Image (cartoon, rainbow, N blue to C red; front, side, top):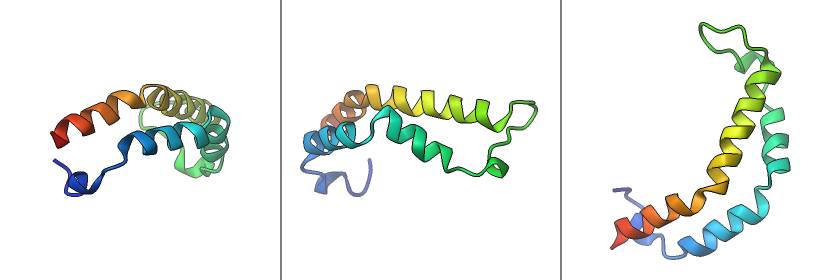
Length: 78
């Protein structure tokens, strides 16, 4: 349980707001701001642009399925 979960009374609104402002384009723009020096994975030869693409795909998929996370939070609240 998260310590702030009892105070989270507007989960549906938060989900809708996040889905409205965090478009795939916005996510890509944010990921583009990550410096190349931060984008190195151990034991791989992936270039920073390839790693950025993975992050954008992952974060976009998470956003597309955000209702699962919000439902879990609502269920945890009881």
